[in-house]
Image (cartoon, rainbow, N blue to C red; front, side, top):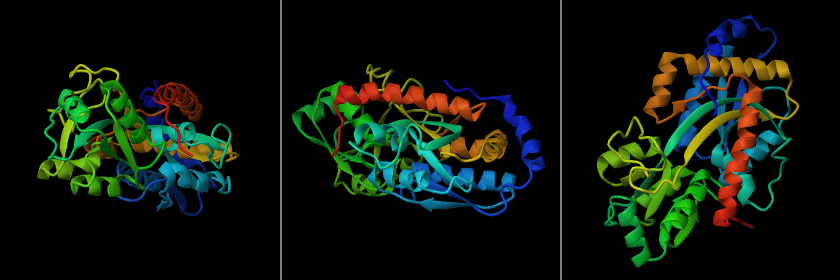
Amino acid sequence: MLRRTALALLAAPAVARAQGFPVRPIRLVIPFTSGGSNDIVGRILAEGMGTRLGQPIVVENRGGAGGILGNDVVAKAAPDGYTMLLAGSGSFVISSLVVARVPYDVANGFAAIGHLGAAPNVIAVHPSLPVHNLAELRDFARANPPITFGTPGAGTTAHALGAMIALTLGFQIEHIHYRGTAPALTDVVGGRVQMITNAAAPFLPFLAAGTLRAIAIAGRQRASILPDLSTSFEQGFPDIDSATWYGLLAPAGTPAAAINRLHAALNATLEDPAMQARMVENGVEIEASPTPDDFARFMVTERERWGAIVRRANLRTD
């Protein structure tokens, strides 16, 4: 498990002293359409890091194929430090386990910059469903198969979590894949799809309006922004356990000096109380990586963990 580190408190002076990089704007590729949790987190981060680096970070949304299209853009970019990827548990790790072939080398095609943190996933349904918790979802879904389930794309954390829920509760699910969270959420709120999971931030206005109903947090701990929502563990289903984590990657071959500069700016941003508050407001629990290598090792561990889940659920796409 990654840990928060006080080393980042020393990062800002290091950033200020470094010379020569960057001398022009940096591109941050978010592998989803705008409006979802990845987009929210990425834009907060771009603002904070850009201030510390002295150059703007320009966000580029490249949605499609559960994150694979955006990942591919970064894998093929010049390894000069001027292109970064907002990677996630689903868009980077799970997608490569579920999709038969990806157009890049997952293990060797990217350089780790650092970990940001993780957001607990909320399980939600359209309010027309007579369910308010996981046990009621199980009973309703078994009596009314299949349950339609919207995801931000094949191979995302939501895709794997949906399969995990169906497998644990013993009901049939029909995955409907979109090009990001926002279009999937639109169809759930509109009553065209019955169920969705995601980090909490994009759900909040719809939960407040009563057009979406949250029934559980998929994990051990409650979310600070939804303190009254019980967890899957509390409801008696500990096998339903998933959070969406975020981190930054660069193309393989990016110079170590640029990686270290970006890592220092990332950790300095995450230590900023104002940035911390904005992340927490959007459901992200911050966990900075002490070094880029720590984040690289974390991704290897995550690939092993999710690989076991994907095999158990037999998740594959053509």
